[in-house]
Image 1 (cartoon, rainbow, N blue to C red):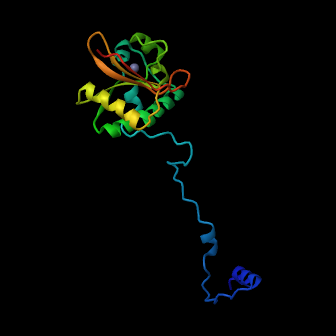
Image 2 (cartoon, helix red, strand yellow):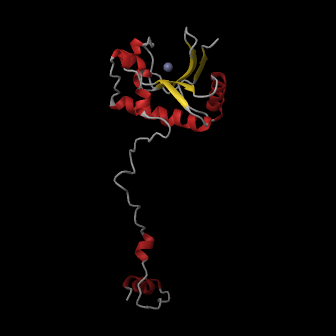
Image 3 (tube, rainbow, N blue to C red):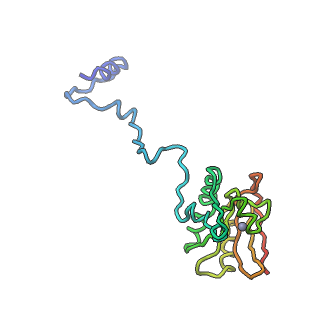
Length: 191
Ligand SMILES: [Zn+2]
């Protein structure tokens, strides 16, 4: 006998259901069981899982290797790199549809000084990356990035189209400045 339904039915003065001896799972309908959570995938505070880039790729540096600099990020700096990948690098790579090479990502202070990086650079914070397209010329890549950030309202601090004395060119993207601001400034340093 389904006691609760009988009680409810008589209380509300509605016809009683025929008791066929097969109780209906009313409680399960009212209170669905929560989805099981696997131990590998806790539902909260999951760090972003990069799709196209790796943390070690962002820490790789020939200069660091040559000079014996460890260039090891802290937990905070690793979190910053994951933000950079989540909000800029992976979506840009997805939109671009072709490989993008990271020429410089995280730089510990020692490495930043060794490569002549600015004192206000956010490379040591893990919030900046220098990239080049693998197979396309940099002008097309630069035009694409300018349009992509505008069309998709991408938040960033600085995008700089850089060039050194040797004529190497690359795109620098900074997610935040050192004060955590996103000023959305586009610069071109290429001739
Ligand atoms: Zn840079």
